Length: 490
Length: 126
Image (cartoon, rainbow over all chains, first blue to last red; front, side, top):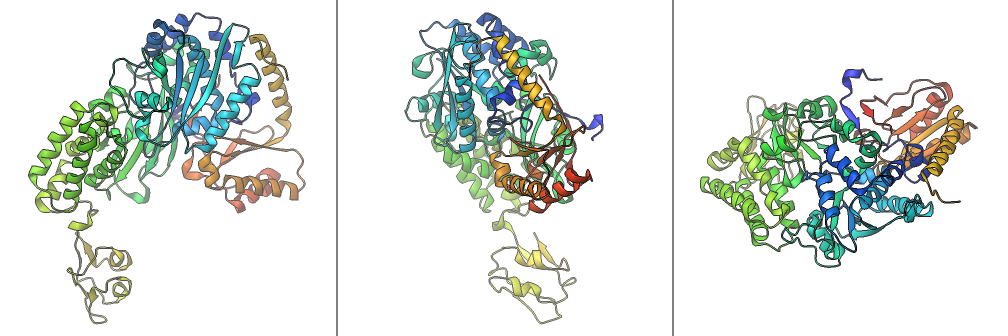
């Protein structure tokens, strides 16, 4: 058992994951499931909205918009039909917290949707979930069916006169459909493209009716807030960000996994105390938060207390909670290129800054990593990034340059080295690498000649060998094989 | 089964379930993490190996259950074992051999087995 001081995690959204059978309604009822729904049905919708506002819960999908305020807008908009939508279109590389909640505690999301439906006056809910999550879909479907069979969904829930039901809509795997207006278009059977706001979905959304779109993790917090109270929830976290956040730790970190910590926990605590630091004794270099929309945080940011504002102030963002850790062997220009490759693929193409801008940004980064970059390219990268941020239609395009801007800011010297000295300081960009043999260390054991796939290493036995740089394909096989550290990578 | 039509009915139902769970207290509960990723890492293999080992050794008072993500990706497959009167213990890296060892050593003799994952979180219980 760990000492108390080691306990940095607090599990609210993932409170039941791993503890209950997700396919058992009884298991959920045993942990006071559906009591939150029963409680709100004795309150007025305005009172429920007020509880969520007071709690200070903000959207966990990335933007951080206050959930209670969103609900309040939908409540005040009169309509014959309103909708509540659960956004389960989780798509950030390295993020899987929504799947974990849906596979581990689906009833908490079902209950929260019913609570939200009552609060805004919606009788119908929909979960928009990616089809690549078959087990999450299966467990969610069973949860909905079981709740309906027990009268916890359907007509006249708890004898209150409130009717509510949920359907499941499948996403086909387009990243942009996580953006709420694109998500709604996709639900309507149209092309998944965002539209400009306003009107916001809370005013005019699914089938032009007031619609609330809430993320899975946001919803998973709601039954706990209703039962334990808004004051309890708002006592956790920082001045502007209340409660906890689930993060998916991935990349070069010892304890890869899901964690849930109070807002205000420092990056140092997350990466070193909980995550265990980088494996193989390597030096921590950076962590990408917010997925392809976020930025890289480095050593200087380790003591930042994580919340929505502090991450934005450092050119990153909370995002859905992916944390990809990088160590000394990672090239930050290549990292930025990796994320741009992703957004370039995932841009929907509706607006020019995102469609063409992503391609141009990627091309410049590609040129730099191949050793053909110039100082003018760095200036272009920066100014193009700034214009895309200012002009793209939706969040995908507006945040797409973040990985570039944040790495240029913190690791500007790496970009400089790539263009001025044609060197990749992390020895990742193969176009700028050379392998040579240190004759003082080489024993002439000939091991390297045997692994070289292009036979570009020559020499006499027991004499120092040489690499023919004109033939070398920079695969690194000799470097890995040499027992005498005689091969130099630079 | 009748529906739950009021808060009182929900509470009564919960009491029933809790009483049933309490009756389970004398049993050994083996909880296997079976999220998509846990299954991919071999969670079902671990479950089947433990079920087989329990049957081979004729242990009667074992109850198996599945749960979702236990959050320890680095240590999948993970299994939580609760011996009567003891705190639940989560074991990581449970391949087939480890699964059988957990039954023969920890479940049958209460002997410690390597791979215990410490509790480093506080869980909100409603």
